[in-house]
Length: 198
Image 1 (cartoon, rainbow, N blue to C red):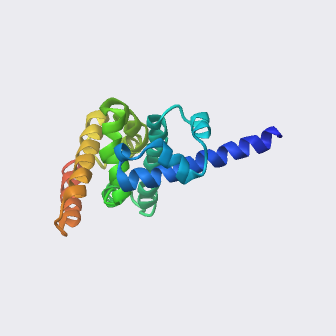
Image 2: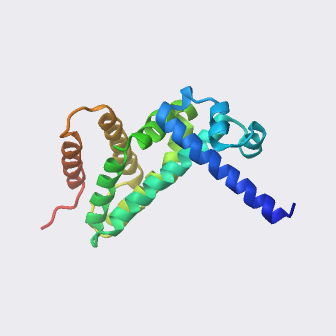
């Protein structure tokens, strides 16, 4: 078999495994999904799974990475739709909260992510994706004088932690007003960091 065809088949197998495991992890949770169920849904063998991933945990990490990238893309798209830098920060933060109300994202990224991978690995993945974008946005706002001059790292961690916690709270809230109230509160929190307009 030509190497190009083999490479294409491997990519198709990997994509099928990611697609089906994501669907199953979102629907049932990591702990309730077995490898046999994943390979049956993907239409591949366990050997094919182990050719692509060393373990169920590694497969989950790849799914989580995919989910985090999609969340990052949605946040970036919301920010880019706004002209001014301040509006971009607010729109991006609000989109993060809205996106995290999706039960699939909640389950994989916020609930199972830290539990399966451990807090430190989950935080490292979060820092590489969403926290990095937030840090870049905050740095640009401080440089432009829109935000009060301050150390960026603690501000990034405080805002990122607050939004992750708010997203987890929204996942369990039954209050239909919860998202609107949370975004209003987030706007107030962000406004408190803004340089006063004279």
